[in-house]
Image (cartoon, rainbow, N blue to C red; front, side, top):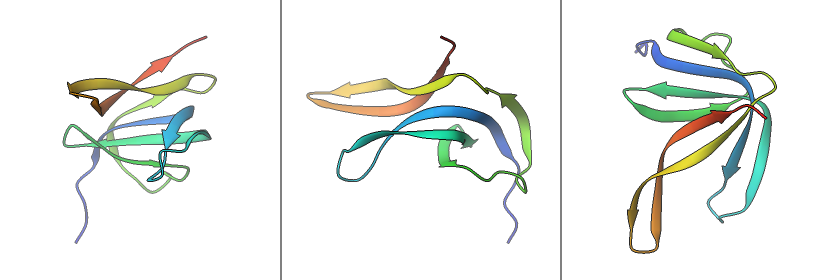
Length: 84
């Protein structure tokens, strides 16, 4: 089954990421894929993906922004792209 196009793909940025062990790092020249209002993937290969909108963010950093806080747990629902 073919997926519908992504809503948004932000390409070429440096993305602040963390893994299942809460290790923090940076994904260089990465892309953020948003579908249905949710971040679906952070990947380095989006050549074959269609999107309603693409943003070229080369030279910029995308970092998670807490969207909801519950006690000490922060849920990261969005990314903001920051130009330095």
